[in-house]
Amino acid sequence: MRSGYVAVIGRANAGKSTLINVLVGEKVSIVSPKPQTTRDRILGVLTENDYQIVFVDTPGIYKARNALTDMMMRTTDTSAKSVDFILFVLDGHEGVKEEDFELIQKYKALGLPMAVAYTKIDIMPKENIPLDMAKFSDADLDLDVFPVSARKGKNIRPLKEFLAQKMPEGEKVFERDIVSDKSERFMISEIMREKILLKFDKEIPHGIAIVINTFQLQDNGVYDINLDIVCERANHKAILIGKQGKAIKEVSSFARQDMEKFLDAKVFLTTYVKVKEDWRDKPNLLREYGYEELKGE
Image (tube, rainbow, N blue to C red):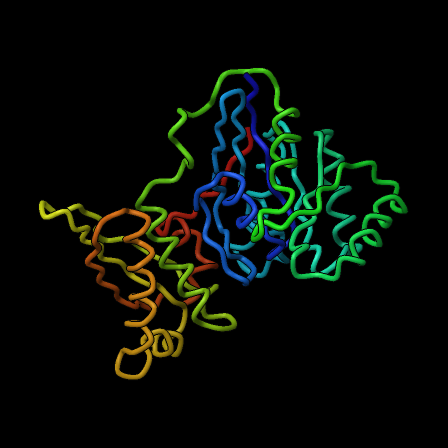
């Protein structure tokens, strides 16, 4: 039996969460086309007969602009130091950039084995792939590179098999039926945040937090979920609610549908929008909303 941890690291919006969801075979991380979608360290667990890989989904590397983003970047760095392997995810659609090589060298310096997942090959010109692979050789980076498409499932199996062989001998960390370390309550809040990220533009989605007030399974088999959407500005609140409440009703409806799929049960969802100015720069509010900094081993 082989068992170990793989930190999945890369620039914001490189496709890390989508790749982990496909590798695990379950939705363990929310996905959107916006940076900062993943805020916490989330574990996705892949268990087969002869191996278990615990994928560590980390916040995308992003220039810090507030206390929350700064904490997210420290979480990524801490995660990279406490694993057996690093999988660096590179957005093939955007192409290889000098910043990618700088980050790869930074994490390679930790002395841990590493490989590269070159993603989104389904939406890029195929002739660009060998050109980008040549850049790795020119940069004198001796790494295994896997061109993959998470959306199409292309080259996912070879990547799984490669990572399994890189895991140390050992017993399973999690029981077979566990796919994530996060609770249902956490995933419900993330589903709500995902729908807001997908519906609203620019800065508003990044300035929101989700606070679950009630998460209870009723005797009739329906989940009663009551939550707050916390934003940073009064004008953001107005946009989130929309004219005659249209926007909040629409996004809540989308979220409720996904919550019902996730919980396999009916959901009665109540949402409120509240304002807490600049909460992302206030450590007490970060803690209150569940953003605890990951400490080093």
